[in-house]
Amino acid sequence: MAGIIPAAGSGSSGGRFRRRRYTPIADINVTPLVDVMLVLLIIFMVTAPMLTQGLTVALPAAEGKSFELASNNPAKIQVMASGAVYLDGIAAGSSNLEQSLGPMLRARRVKRALLEADKSVPYGRVVAVLDIMNRAGVEQLGMVTQPKESRGRPRR
Image 1 (cartoon, rainbow, N blue to C red):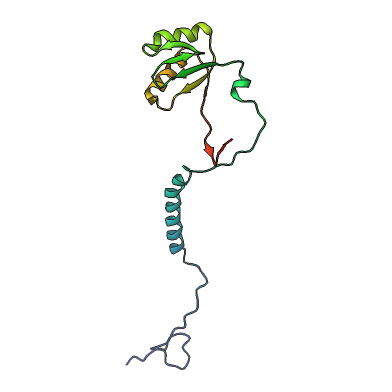
Image 2 (image 1 turned 180 degrees about the horizontal axis):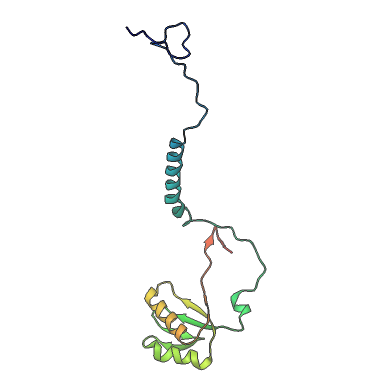
């Protein structure tokens, strides 16, 4: 007959139903950590572009010249609410601007200009004037706006 062989290291206890002693594992299971980090990465990737759209930036104050003073008398192009376009107070017409405004700008060799457009003028009209200015050789353009007022004082 075959006898029961005690397990190694069992000593005198017999050894068939030996209890194991579990010791704490000193290693960190990184799988849950990686899962959490990937979820956080996805959350930040989705939300980051949304955060940059409405930032308020406090700009530093500087003593610089405005565009008008620094640019050797730029031409002033005005687009009125009626659609009429003026170049330095001289009417350039309201229709067929390619035939009127373009030659006027080329004849004066305008390189710098300020554009004043009424806020009720359709965007397409302003883009048409900008296109004519670009094809006429205007290299630098300033858009004239009114500063927003807050609490009765104009904002700088």
